Image (cartoon, rainbow, N blue to C red; front, side, top):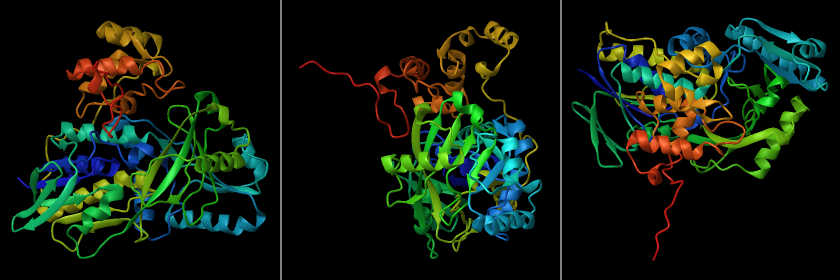
Length: 476
């Protein structure tokens, strides 16, 4: 059986792995962190772009359109949060109206449906909280919102059920081509063999490529800072609100999340360090001030957390997808915005291409559907009563802000590629994502993790950094 190694467990790596599992092959994902969705994917705006921004004829435009069309079916099949909520691009100056028209025309050329140019009155009829200081806007009904980390986890769980082997804490440090294919070396000294290696390493994809390829890639880490607002602000907009884009990206947005919060950001600053996830006073002030240009009633006192993420901006100017100059080494690199939107379509394309290269046959036993963890907070009273009768742990609320039960947390830990950290539980259940940001539930989540994993309480960590939360002071 042919062996395929996917480097990287973000939304791209997980989606590619799942689609490859449709074929008769041994698929392995090597992820440098202790969980999937721990890099760029976890700190993503969560926007499913309509397709009017990417330049016509690029891979970004192609896969944006194909990916967008897949979300309705895919979100039901893999059971992750998704909603088509529409998007505005606001224009604040009459001199910019021709540029707004060009954005509209590009959308039409790219094949975007239900796209319109609206007057200020038409905009305010849909979203009254938008500023009066606009001269017009583009409106795209097919834009949507998704939970990016839940999407990646859904892909990963389904891939695992279909036989994909996920190896965590496996940072790739070496690649060597031989007559039989490839040897992939990881930091812990392990060596894995494959017929084909697929590079889905996100901001580190250039480093992986440059280990073996004559054609070098350069990925510039572009940091974006965000603010997340309490659900009490959810009434401010049900639509994603962009401002006119610049060469650095789509600018500061104001958007609802799939769970009822409001998110604002991101900034766009090129940095030297790919691990620079610190937020800054200047960056957060920029997010706040520019977001209030779109929605003046935003109030900083309702911000419940800030965070940042790193995007993989490739100097090629487009996605880099395909076999490299080394036979059997396949790049899926430079997947910045609209990468999340494009992920489902990229995955299908890559899997079909690899299957053709290796002459793989389709599996008859592929399981296409996956069921998410039951979310107690979203159930009716009768549904809750039924679930508690089946499993009393669903009657014990651990996270009060998000109404997350012990049953959900235990399920998150014991599923395929289960949570092993506090943030792993958070991404799967939302425990700790509410107003108090784990102030009440952290200790209980840690206790449940320790119990279910069979480890000491003190060894439970917050996230992929492996930093401990609790330290025991020894008496001298």
